[in-house]
Length: 306
Image (cartoon, rainbow, N blue to C red; front, top):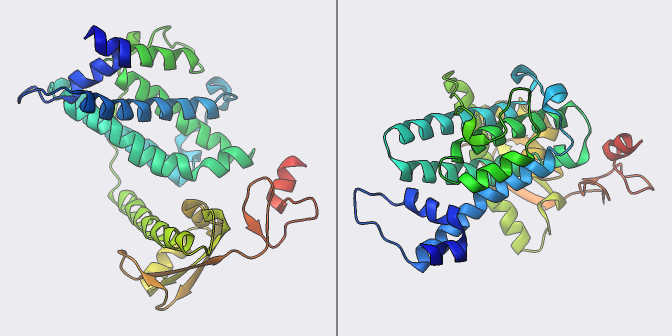
């Protein structure tokens, strides 16, 4: 154990203990520890990224109500609630490997690959209520996540806790805090809607990768995406503001067209094509816009700076 602690740290050894299913033979090797160090790094980097984006957030004055958040923020908090419910049940049942797997999956799939990626533009390029909504969401996620990991990654959790802006009544040490409570409000229609949006996004990402390989675009923000939709899919996507749809896909422009066309994906009633976005690149947000001015800024960025 001392050799492992000196090489990887005590928290990595603790992570190995919980990751192993003690009902079967427990295996350990340098390869297993290296794999777990990647899992640990994902958790740590998720916390580090959030801390960097809430450095100017005061939870006592800036916190927004759930009802005032954007839909994607609500989706993230609902995913957090489901994680909390799963993890607390696993803790109570001594199924610690489920705890480790669920936390890793949340940090990688829900946060890094989707929510934190999609909200970058809102965080970096705006100063509106939308930015505060994203910060509110990230703050709540980090506080709950830190409490959840504290029994396992006790040193890392306290390090994170020391940097989290405190609400009145918060304890000095995270291990003195109560575990977060899972909200039990289920909304099947909301879950189904966002599962469909994410499925569309995943299909678009594959087409963007091909366009990148074909040298049609460099980064995804150079892309303008045309979605060829069945009547049902058109009505579904058209209910989402086009700028939000573009942000979800991290592209500069999205067009919806009724009818068949483009490359078919896994989502029924959807075809896709990618072209280089028209206009010039905004020097601040890197989106392409036909209204970029002589100062190199799109109208939105010029307004924010003005």
